[in-house]
Amino acid sequence: MSSVTVIFPSVLRAKINNNSSITVIGHTIREVIEALEQYAPGMQFNLCYETGELRPYVNIFLEKENIRFLQGLDTPVPAGARIRILQSVAGG
Image (cartoon, rainbow, N blue to C red; front, side, top):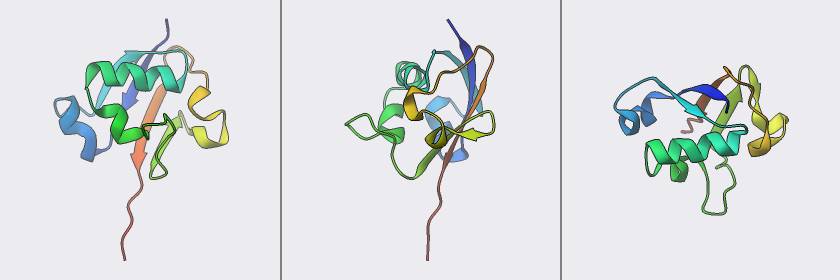
């Protein structure tokens, strides 16, 4: 199994005991999100719609690449990778 580090924005850190990152296991981004849900119930809702698709204001980076430009949630994740979750900020 691939152990990866997931780095969270400040708005989601309360869900993970105010840590800035956690380590989970997953071979794809989708599996990583499922592991995050096991660690912090409700996390998947913050990242994805009920249909399983990534919410438009959530950006996930595998190393420095946005997964939207790779294979989306089916992007393979190598062991030891760093995944960064960023939420877009909008305002007027």
